[in-house]
Length: 163
Image (cartoon, rainbow, N blue to C red):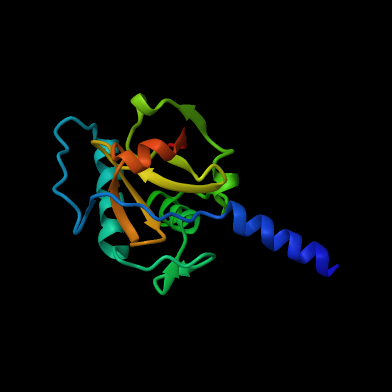
């Protein structure tokens, strides 16, 4: 029994979302250019930037789901539920299994973007616009990052459309 518990904890720790990135991030949220968005996309984008304003700087904590600390999949789950009214699974692995695949060149506001760090660790964020995404990083907590940074481009895995 103890071996099974240790095995489960090991699997969780290896597949949990942890990141140590070196890239530009925005603080506070940049001005939103909504001229090219339809009304629904504009509402979603504004809700996501509002979520960033409310949670920016919240530290990363594996398994956390509060402003004392939150991990990437917990932040995505909480954001989708509170801001978009959509329930998502709790883990990055399960979030990666829902929705419809979308190519990186066809990303829309609200799409989930997934990364593989060092080949095994998984990370998830929510695409905003103009190659920016919202996520909870291990190094900086809740933040906005540039998808086209060298770090994130090398770790990019896939994207899913939920909306």
